[in-house]
Image (cartoon, rainbow, N blue to C red; front, side, top):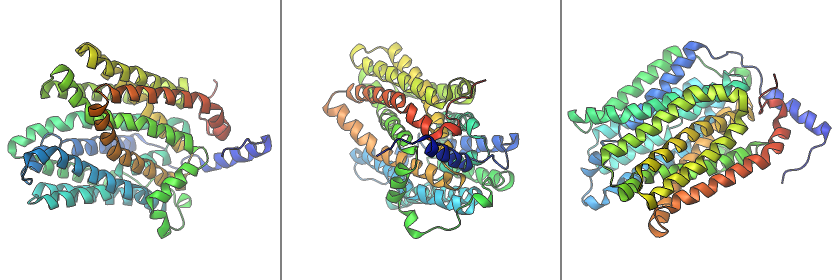
Length: 436
């Protein structure tokens, strides 16, 4: 239960928060920023290159074609479960030994996973590759902690936006390159992903200096700290984080449902062909790039993370309503309007949440907190599609989107009600823009 603080306690707490968010020793240079954005771009592209060929590769190793969809889903779930288990542990190790060596381990694991998947030969080999890739799938959370190490607290949302924009470009380009590479065989895109990850390893090895100063590293690590459930519990009990993590969960659940359900919705309601569905994802990625790469950096100094969160959640509500409406109107115009609003609002929400989390965490805990948050999102990506699929079939095609709109209203209310508490917990940490 949260308690009210006296002015003396608040002053002491604020002093502690100020000490926990020191000025970065090595600020973000242009070269480092370029390398980080390139890593985000190549990592995202390496993952999405597989999308066009994944069903065809899996189909070779199953006896019943009717099992294809479920097996592809299981491969995705296996990766997410392994990431849930490993991401907090990788974050802890990066807090102890630094970001750079753990990032390199993650990248080597991804490269090995891609190579094994491309070689294939049996279904268990594909499963093994996803296990290896999932257990070393902490590269994005380690990179997030890296950004927090080398930026001022009030600048982090902007840099997280650049980071997200780089990943967004990779999200768009990857499937296109994967479809073209498939002309040389279904395994060609997988080996291309391995090559992309090898390039990332070289970039990190030669152009990415260590970001975490030794005086801010954990001095020791116990075996019990590698328990992901313990890390989630600690995450929820960390001062000031509980509300932000809950908002992250509320945002992630309907988001994951849309990722897996949107293609089915437009086929059932509008009879779209694969090429048109691909255009939808192009629109999503384009809006995400524009908002995170250009607008967030300009809007954050004006509104601050919390107000951008409120605006983003309100826009998500509108987007979900528009998407639900096509079940009844069968209107492509409303579909693309809903996609545009939904994608733009996601670009506001994601860097704002990441920025708020990073402000409330000390340098020696950035890795484990970002890793735990990534692990929680991975767990949601396992559960979300199951819930969404059940609702879509049993409660009507519009139901996942209508429920998503209600969840966004709850999120708007939570941000509004929680602002005084967040301000009290972090007033010196500059969660609001400073008056000029």
